[in-house]
Image (cartoon, rainbow, N blue to C red; front, side, top):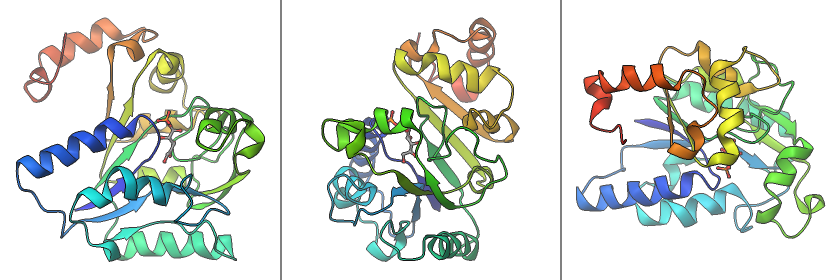
Length: 235
Ligand code: F6R
């Protein structure tokens, strides 16, 4: 399986859970490949604020994934466009991503596809929005200025090429943007809204994150009647 992976605070409990399941059920990731969504420009893998480091810390060092099968964008590449092209070609060469995990940022981004990103974008360098730098400042120090200005990120169209997508969002701070992404118009101002066009995308949220959904009653009605979801649907 080829997995597309996300980082961020939302994903930490998911990786913890996954590590537990892999251990308990004696599963192996030896035949898995992974591609991370994004990386900060200028950070190398040993930098504790890099996404490479995050993945080692929160997931990879706990499982048997072969190091040569986990792929990252190189934030220290001298030619960022060439690095983005290499990544796109590598994803294509392994047959594309089977399952892509996503979080959603306060700016409505998926990956680092900030507002005004083309919904047809491919992997490329992308400057971070002030909102995202503010959101992620805790990973760098005190102020927004400590956060790198630029990232390398899979594009919206790269993400939409995945066979299956799961977006995870938790907490009331994400409720409003999540509702806009799910129920609002498809717009480059909220790149997560492009997921509405994907044929196999599931959105998993907790109670606090559900507050702003206007279609909540209907969603609950449907999920309770869906045998694939009923057992996971916690009241
Ligand atoms: C991280 C990523 C971002 C995060 C999003 C949510 O690899 O691509 O889109 O998923 O910013 O971050 P948290 O979970 O920290 O709120």
